[in-house]
Length: 217
Image (tube, rainbow, N blue to C red):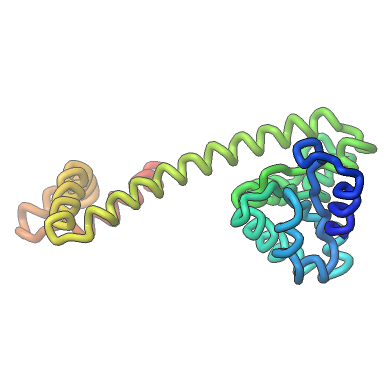
């Protein structure tokens, strides 16, 4: 079908720069099987989860969504995730927690767009639906940025630890940064036991230090 559409535009001699973007709606098992070829001929795809659920079985939709988004990302193609993203807002002013997680997971998977359907066409709260979707997207993007920053730091540490001297430097820096927390935490929970036993509390205290925020709660 995509090839036929391209042939029609070729026959009409439409310049490529003036042609509309081709975004196939993926809804059948055949499309999943031939997704690489479809992406080569198009500028993106739509993950039509409603139709995919009917054609492939609802239990296969989550994995199909992840596969399609990954394939599109690898080829640097635009991908839309659609259908029932905030379905309950057809009738209710707030989405379910599962729906919020669904939108977030699509963004974390790498989707470029999330699409509403009945929520903004026949639903009772179209404006609130878009406001809610916008907040979810913004929070998800902030989370992705934080994760990317952490991954960047982790990559730098891994690169540094490829040599023995680099590993020693990283361990020394880690111990130096943890020592004040280790000492304070151990003292609070066990008194001055470390001075009485002459045993290093490093391993035990690192575990306590790691979970210190939870202990405060």
